[in-house]
Image 1 (spheres, rainbow, N blue to C red):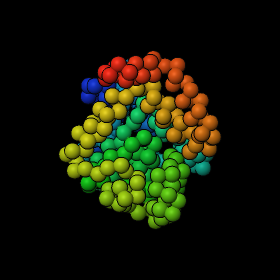
Image 2 (tube, rainbow, N blue to C red):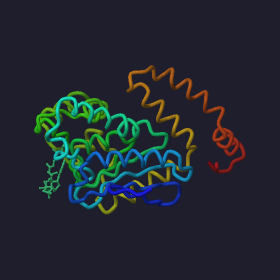
Image 3 (cartoon, rainbow, N blue to C red):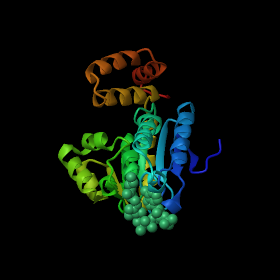
Length: 257
Ligand code: COA
């Protein structure tokens, strides 16, 4: 598949790197980029050779500086609603509920739709120079790609209110303190650090990663997470990964998933 705004690189060891390639526009998410990211994730879902995805922005300045403001500047109410709905369903929800762990490597500005994209990922690492914020109120908007829901889940309601109502940016150090990112590293070490955690994940059962993501997300989506956990826990017993994991343990060898 050919993409204009996305590149995919196989890093080996079941890890794939997806890069958003619009550096001149600080990787802003226009319609085409969102559609391409959707296609990329659908193809990665079906690729047995991929078990963890790293998502990064091209260049050294930005992860993603938001939705493309130029594209929606003349939108009507209906078009605005459609933009948020399509974006949420085709990309942001797709990533949040992806069956394989997705790690955001926040290598610079993650603003608006860019921070929302990082928040839809399962784990976030940031470089020291990264800046994060939801500045939509400065444009007469509110976050539309899930930001009003995911930010309070990650940092708490009070901090989310402050970030969204002021529209201000926070540093990666503050994001770490808030729990918005899991770790902060120098920019040149960002991908290596993400790769290290990806390698740890890959050693575990892929079907367990998928079930864990579903179970964790379930309660946040307003469902009975405890009951979902029971069902998913039970279904693990029917997988070949479970047979391999327990057999390996009992035979004192490393499992091969
Ligand atoms: N949508 C469309 N274009 C964007 C963009 C966005 N969200 N963010 C940056 N760009 C474009 C700029 O228009 C500029 O394009 P140009 O060179 O053709 O004029 C280019 O990317 C570089 O950005 P610039 O503003 O010149 O860089 P900077 O270093 O001075 O400022 C930011 C960086 C991130 C502070 C600034 O670009 C910004 O505020 N962007 C918008 C952030 C935002 O409000 N996002 C939420 C959208 S809902």
